[in-house]
Amino acid sequence: MSNSLDRKKEAWSARFSEPVSELVKRYTASVDFDQRLAQADIRASLAHAQMLSEQGIISSADFDAIVEGMAKIKAEIDRHEFVWSVDLEDVHLNIERRLTLLIGDAGKRLHTARSRNDQVATDIRLWLRDVIDSQYELLQQLQQALVGQACAHTNTVMPGFTHLQVAQPVSFAHHLLAYVEMFSRDAERLIDLRRRVNRLPLGAAALAGTSFPIDRKRVAALLAFDGLCENSLDAVSDRDFAIEYCAAASLIAVHLSRLSEELVLWMSPNIGFIDLPDRFCTGSSIMPQKKNPDVPELARGKTGRVVGHLMGLLMLMKAQPLAYNKDNQEDKEPLFDTADTISDSLLIFIDLVAGIVVKAERMREAAGRGYATATDLADYLVRKGMPFRDAHEAVALAVREADREGIDLGALPLSRLRQCSNLIDEDVFEVLSLEGSLAARNHPGGTAPDAVLAALARHRERLGIR
Ligand code: ARG
Image 1 (tube, rainbow, N blue to C red):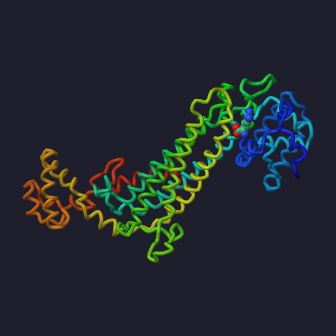
Image 2 (spheres, rainbow, N blue to C red; image 1 turned 30 degrees about the horizontal axis):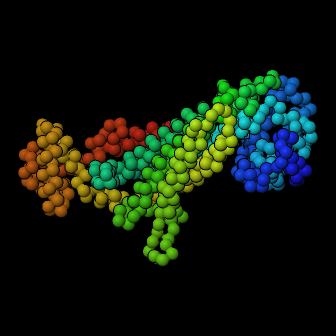
């Protein structure tokens, strides 16, 4: 099972008079983390070998042996029996050396017309493509969970905030649908950048292409790439596709952090708009009364590492001369950690959002404090002919009145309201109600129950919810 036979002999050893030190070996090796690319590496190698054999560059017997050997290696890896060796530096050399041990010279022919430079670029793209597809699916599920919650709350009134001050009433459904919009754009971004991830670097070889009569389009088709990386120097060196993914991931993390922050605030006993199921919370080791929203807090915190990885990759790429440089080996850990963090966060939020327990009466009560319908009163006066700036002044007077009494605008008697403007009549109380305020904003994008129902119908259709 071990590949120790050849372990002493590096792939380039003939050129060197002394081996690298243990420290340098550890410093330069990537196998501890890039073994995650093993499945992609095998897939890409099989496509490359098939093309080599179809082009007559290797024999079909060699190709058959490679297929057989790779199947064994894949099984060893799946069963966690494959022995990874730091002496063999990275995932590519580990697999190739094992293949050669298993099938002899045919294994050594696999590397014809390619280099680890185009090989690793291909592997990362294949791996990332799967991540993108699975995270697109998770984003759809998260939107479905948000829409599911929203469906029950088109008439649940809460205060909408600006500057975290009560501003105007909105429905809880409308609030949740704001996040649906954000996550739908995040999903769109993944689809868009997938087109640029899904190009084939193989054939670029080390940097300049290869002298063998390869068929790159055939390899692209075998691996379901949308097209080729059109310049060999660019193909092996740039990692902009990974940076783009990390930028999209950063926006996902930022959107999750906004939602997290609101969940934390809403769950604070001082606000008390929601409760979260116990499975997302922990207690305190000293304060028996505590139930802390750990999951949203952690999600908020993890935004830092995701955005940090984006910065790291940008700096990794900055000022790298053409073509491949070993710097690029540093692309993997941030990329892997970004993908893992986003997948875990999305998975947990799908469950978390569905589990939100809404305290509608607390939301309503909060919307009734803070003069949330003041704008409605100003709009009312405008409809009666008063210029908006004057109406703004008149309502400010009314708010002062109400504030003095410690009551909401709608609780002021008509006579007091008329002191601010004699344009005010009995019909004002409908306008000053929370329901009246919501219903008045009945246009696409507005918070009126009818407008929100229309938005919900659109999202349900788009997300395939029956
Ligand atoms: N482990 C390397 C990486 O991740 C593979 C490519 C190495 N190529 C080279 N010429 N040293 O980038």
